[in-house]
Each structure stands twice: as C-alpha cells, then as structure tokens.
Amino acid sequence: MKPLSLSILFITLFNYVSLGQTDTSIVTKLSVTVLSLRNGESSGTGSFIMTDSNSYIVTASHVAKLMNQNTILIIQGDHNKPITLKITDLANPVIWLSHPNADLSVLKIAPSKTIYDLYLKRRFVPIKMIDTSLIPVPRNLQLTTLGFPLGIGDFEYFSPLSYRSYPSSEFITLPRFDTKVPQTFIILENPSVSGYSGGPVYETGEFQTSGIKSFSGHVVLHGFIHGTISDRTGGKLTAMTPAFYLRDLIK
Image (cartoon, rainbow, N blue to C red; front, side, top):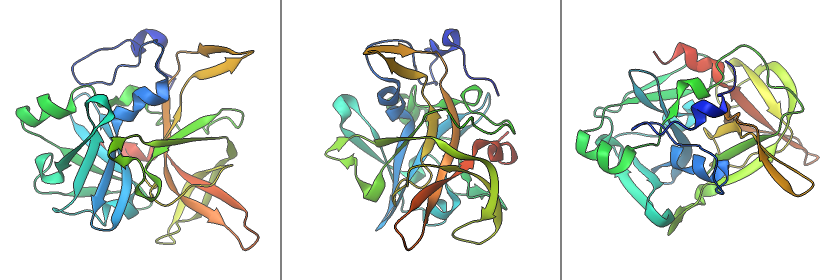
C-alpha cells in the first residue's frame, strides 16, 4: 500500500486520528492510537485500527493469549493522564482472532455509543495508513516503535516510549520465538524490550536537516513487534511482524 498522502493526513473524521501539520510531533500524535494491555503481571502494547466497517485492537498473539475478561486497557486522556477501561467495555465476550502462523491477533470491538463518544473518538488508525503490501520496508528508512516496555509509560502520566531503528533485513523466515512455527519477519537493527510486544512500528515522515524539521506527509504503519533476537555475546536485534498478515485477520 502506498504511503498516506499529506492531503489525507489532514483527515479530522469522527473516528480517525488526526495527523495534520502542527508543532506537535507525529510520534506524540500517534500516542492516542496505542494502548497498554494489562492482566495481572502480564502486559503488552496494542493499537486501535479501523476498516471501513469494523474497529479492532491489534497486538501480538503471545500477548493476546494472556488477556481475558479481566484485562484492563489504559489509554491516553486529557493532559496525558491515563484512562483505565475494562476490556469488556469494548468487547464482550472477549474473543481474539489469532493468525495461524504469525504472531498477530485482533480483537473486534463494539463499544456502546457512550463509551465510544467519551473515550474512543479519533483514536483509530485507518487501514489506508497500514502497509499490507508484500513489499519489504527499504533498509534506509528510519522506523519508530511505540509501546510500554516493562509496563513503563501508563501510570500517573500516559507516555508510550518510542525508539528508532532501521531494517537490517528484507523479508526473512524464522521460527517464532514462542511457538517455533515458521513466520516471515523483518529484522530491525535495535533491540526491543519486554512490554513492547505488539507495539506498532511506523514510518513517521519526519526528518531533520541542518536543524530544520520537515514532514514528508508519509505516515505508514509497517508492522508490529514480535520480540528480541539475542546471543551470548550480548548482540541483540528485533523481529517485526510485517503488517501484511493483517489481511488474513480483518475485513
């Protein structure tokens, strides 16, 4: 899928996140689209996404399998204060649809109008912003991941952590770290941390040259964090699940 053009980025529809050009960084604006999933000691990162007809939460399957009717969702409120919702406020029963091969799951949500109007306006990433093509991310493209490593960023103030990296591979097939089922990944240069699992990986379209900040108009969601590759020498990389797997899960 082609990157979303600047004209489309000025969307201020009732449902979609608004990413128009202002002094606020794109990464900061994208914070409203992510959520912290917590169930007891288990935690992970999710994203709100939307097709023309349905709304979803998407995360890694190894996170989703730990989330049940008792899960709480933490989202950004006014003045960066966290808002806590029950997962059953958005979906009841809680039925995750998981990909048979990839570490990717979606939860179709159908909140009441009251919950929607109070908490969910303009939080959704439209499917047009998601790269579901079978084209690898170019290796010279800087990517930004959002999430809650070690559960940091969802208490007292809501501030998902971000880190930048570059692809160090095109598509590559490896056994999943949790199930050992073969899956296609893109490997990123910088390592991930527990809690980033399921976190979205974006091309933000922001860059800085000679102290001047610019915005290309291209904001694209390319994938979701699976986990960290490491060895005994201390070397680490990140495995990202490409977003094309979403095509098998959402309609």
